[in-house]
Image 1 (cartoon, one colour):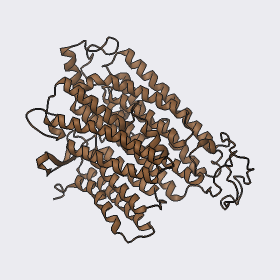
Image 2: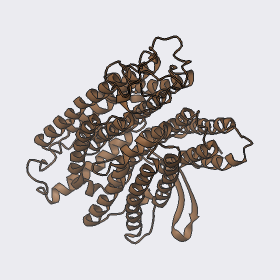
Image 3: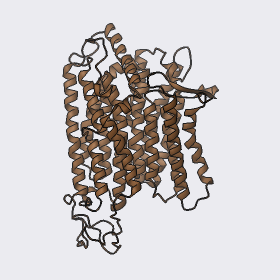
Image 4: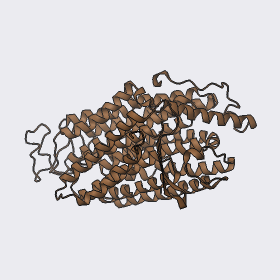
Length: 566
C-alpha cells in the first residue's frame, strides 16, 4: 500500500490545497497564518525527505515513483509526475529554500493572508515543474509560478515594484510561448501523439527540427537562467522584491532554467546540443565576465548580488557544454550550491535592510560594530560565493573547470581560452564581494549625505533606544532614518542563516552528500551526448570549424571523473 501511495502528487498538492484554506483561518493579527504556512512548508519538506529516503534509488538513471492519471484525455493531458537524478535534488532545494523564506518573512504584516497564500502556491508550482513528466503539465506549472512571483513583487516590493514586476512577467511570459510551441511540435511529430517525456525520448526528430526546437527552448530557459542578453529583468526584480522573495528568485527560480536546459534540450534534443554546445560555452563565459564587471557598478546591495547570480550561472552553462561527466555533475552541483549561497546572501541583505532601511551601500559604513553576528554570517556567505576552499562554491566551480579542461571533444585552444576567461570571472568575484563587505560593515566607504552632525556613536549605550528626533549614524553617514534599529541578529535570523551555511560547508567538505543523488543520471546523460557527437562526426567529421572542435573523439572512454565528486 505504501509503495502505491501517490507520494509526489501529495507533495505537489499539499501546499496548493493548504493555500486555499488560509481565508478560512480565524486570524486577525496574522500570527496564526504565519505558523500555519510555516507548518505546511515544514510538513511538505519532511514528506519529501521521507519519500526520497525510502523510495528513491540513486543507483538508477530511470524515472522513479511514476504516477500517471488521465486529466484531460481530449487534449492528451495527463497528470504524470516522477523523479530521477536531475529532479530529486532540486525538489529538495525548492522545499528547503521556500520553507526558510517563509520563516524569513515572519515580520510581514501587510496582507499576511494573501502573502502566505501566494508563497504556498509558489511552493507547489516550483515542485511541480521539477517533477512533471508530461510536457503540458510542465508548461502549466511553469506558468502558474509566474503569477505569485508577479504579485509578491508588485505588492510587497520597493518603490519601483510595479515596473520590476511587469518586466519580470513580460520577459518570462513571452519566453514561455517557446516552451508551449516546442511541446506541441514534439508531441505531434511522428505517428503517435504524446507529451510524456519518457516517450518523447524514443522519437527521432529531423536535425533541422531539433535545431529549431533547441533554439526556441534556449530562449525560454535562457530568460529564466538569466543568460546574457536575456537577463535584464533579474537585477530589477531583485532590487525591488522583498528579501524572502529574492531568496526564492535566486535560490530556486533561476535553477528552473538550468533544469529545463538539461531535461529538455540535452535529454530530448541531443543531436542539436552537439551544435549548440560551443554556443553555450561562449555564453557561459560572457555571463561570468559580464556579471562580474557589472557588479562593480552597483551601489544597491541587492542589485550587486543579482549580477553576481548572473555571473555564477555562467558556470552552469559551461558545465552543461563540457561533454564530460564531471562537468555536467559540476553544473548541477553549481545550481544546488548557488541556490543555498544566494538565498543566504539575500536573506542577510534583508536583515541588514531591516536595521538600516536602505540598500544603498554608499549610505552605510561601520555597522559591523553594532551587528557583529550579521557581519560574521554575511562574511561566511560571501566567502562561499567567492569559492573559498571548503565551501560548496569551490567544489562546484572546480568541477566545472576540470570538466572543461579534461574533455576530449573541444580543441585545446578552445578549452584554454574558455577556462582562462572563466578564471578571470573567478578573480572578479572576491573583489566586488569584499568591496561590498568593506562598504557596508567597515567605517570607510560611506558618503556624507547631509549636514546633520551625528549625535551618536556606535558604542553609545543608548543607541538602541535612539528616538526619531535624532539622526541615525553609520560611520560618516547620518542620512538614515532616525528610528533604525541597530540590534544584532536575533535567534530566528541566526537559525535561518545557520541552516544555509551548514549545508554550504557540508557540501564543500564532502560534495558526495549532493552528487550521490544524481551522479548515475548525469553519467548516463553525458554518455548520450557523446554518442550523438560520435554519430554526427562519423557522417560528417568536418562539420565544425578547424581549431574549435577536434574532428573526432580521441578516446571512446568517458571523460575522467574528478575523484572528489565520486
